Image (tube, rainbow, N blue to C red; front, side):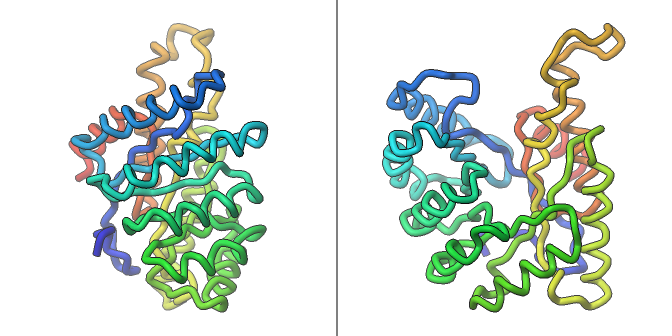
Length: 267
């Protein structure tokens, strides 16, 4: 199987994914041709990188969605010929993601993980996934009952169990990581007890959550907080390690040093 994660309730195996943005988060330019070339270079740079998967966040914006979407269309040939397993993420807008994820699922023929369908849009996204070889991430807030309910509703639409990954959501270190960690443990324990509606691989986009922390965006903290670059690395490494300990199957991070450290220490 392409995503060689042991997707059984007894597994402690995990894979590490490295995420890159489609548009440069730090570039306010509306020169999308230039930004697209930058994306192609970022993607090329990951080919020999020691991550198990590459996650692409198609961080399109409501304001210029149509213009940006034209460059998403141009990316499909490159994605189909990419040498690593892919996670194709939407823009975290429930309505825009219906068009964006359905397009990616239809036009990227390379088997990938599509992320993510939620309560507000799963009815519009899952029928497309059913007709393709892709897997789908089902995301719910940090609530075991909501996670189970969305799994059941998705299966009722005809989605096969082996196409489902779940994202029970989490906060970053210092911002709710303990709640996310506890939720993953509860899901895994209920699966061990025989609850088939929770017996799915867990994926966590912990890198994105960590990046929201104010401690990683400002160098105005006291000297004893350490240099901000090292702080960014250590913050994500600590959070990702915690999520792995909670038995997540795929952990998505945003810093190369996190991938390197986890590969050296935990694998």
